[in-house]
Length: 192
Length: 111
Image 1 (cartoon, rainbow over the protein chains, first blue to last red):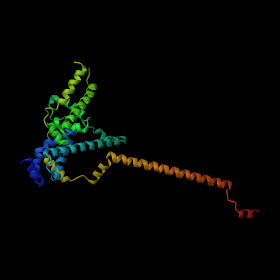
Image 2 (image 1 turned 180 degrees about the horizontal axis):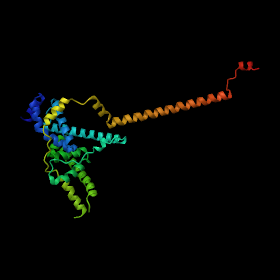
Image 3 (image 1 turned 90 degrees about the vertical axis):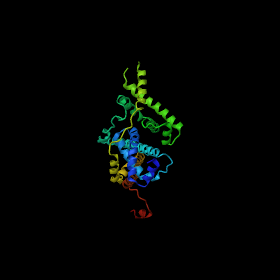
Image 4 (image 1 turned 45 degrees about the vertical axis):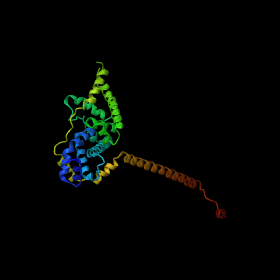
């Protein structure tokens, strides 16, 4: 079954097509979400939400872009929304802590450990993921899609609905900002 | 190797640390969890309301409105208090010094 057939069957509400959709794209959706939110539980939640939204709104997919591009856009939108909600919750937790309740503040996010990174590179990767949290969303998205999802700059441009030149520029700035953040971290944590 | 060289080396290692990373996979039985979530239904009205209220723009506007209302109430009370005090003072003085309007009848009735 190719993408077009899959979409047609999904639009007809075919249950088997939905199962195939989840089987074929779950890793793509989950890995992208995980790269953005850096939390396995949250990424799992987002993955579920993405597939539910696809199931409900597949009729609005007109085929202007590739189906996977559409899926990437939904995933990124959900992941960024999720992050905003988490930040709001954290802020609310801080306000609550001022009035005596410490529950929300105590739930600080633990250091993220991407399961796909090789053992000998885990430590550096953790530092990279921490630095990623500090750079602007667009740069982070471009970096995540290219580095974690293995998308080419051209594909990233398609997903982000921008030009190849803009993606090159975003990647350049992302790397420069990451270098800056990492340098800040190592300056403090590396001894002479 | 001095500290700066060491840091530069670590930065490059960190930037390249995810280059050959495997894609992460979700926990098994994702489809089952999706079905369970679909059957659970959408967010309740209260969840939606709390989400709306906790938005920074809404929360900040609400807070400003409350502060503004309080300021207005305080200002209004101050104005009405000072008016009352002034009225009371005039009344007290009038009583004390028997400020009355002398009329022709008062003169006629004065022995």
